[in-house]
Image 1: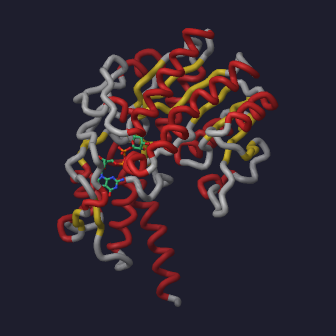
Image 2 (image 1 turned 180 degrees about the vertical axis):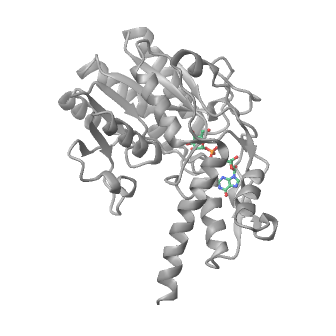
Image 3 (image 1 turned 60 degrees about the horizontal axis):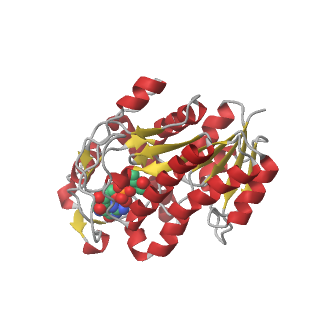
Length: 328
Ligand code: GDD
């Protein structure tokens, strides 16, 4: 049986990868961090699957990664673990660098030392392009605008170095923004769909956002996971941009969500400087030609389908909340 080890397995993309690898017949080992509160919600639907095993560890702790790699010797290692919130990286830069950058070296060193034939892929980020204008592809120069992006860039180059120095099968998945009903609630798309559905049911009055002029390339986490699966299973390791090739502003996203719910976003959204970043990334839009051509990947979800699925899921959540509130 093929084995895969996934870090960040309790996160959004990690959980979609679990679904994907289980459906392909893999034995899936997932790394989870010890937490006093439950952090495995995204895996609830698949928790009882005998082919899923969660292990405690932390990518910032080399010994935990090295021990697990030495014991499991997985065929594949997918690194999704990170401090993934760009704005928060301005508050906790040193931790972010460890968790999102230096940690990649922990993974690579663990593989080199204990299981050199394990294939590796890390979630790299379009944030690395920063202020370089779109469209962005594998040749676009980097100009990171946060320590999060600086950390991702360090991890990106570490992967290339281990490929060149040790001939390891390691790749970068340069992911543009990735969304779904399982997206964390402090990222802007989910923050909007969650708030709009709650406002619709009278559970909330206002939504406070930061820079609504920022433009992003939003894909569904299902499609991102499919792309990662193809890259790590390709015969040659390489670096690929993953995105929809379509760009929308935060304002456009909010306008669409509120209008689908029969509301005008202008009546409910206010700006709060708390959500501004010290240095912003204005516009990200992928040119995913390389992955389409080399690996035959193309996204299943359109932008509108992604928005519809997120609204439908958050409406169910809001309805449950309302039911509980009305019966108190
Ligand atoms: N989070 C957040 N909250 N963002 C806001 C808000 C708000 O209230 N208001 C406006 N924004 C703007 C941000 O300033 C940013 O320009 C844009 O919305 C998207 O913010 P996020 O959803 O937080 O995502 P991100 O683009 O910063 O980073 C995400 O995508 C990267 C790939 O490009 C994360 O998933 C990263 O981990 C990932 O690498």
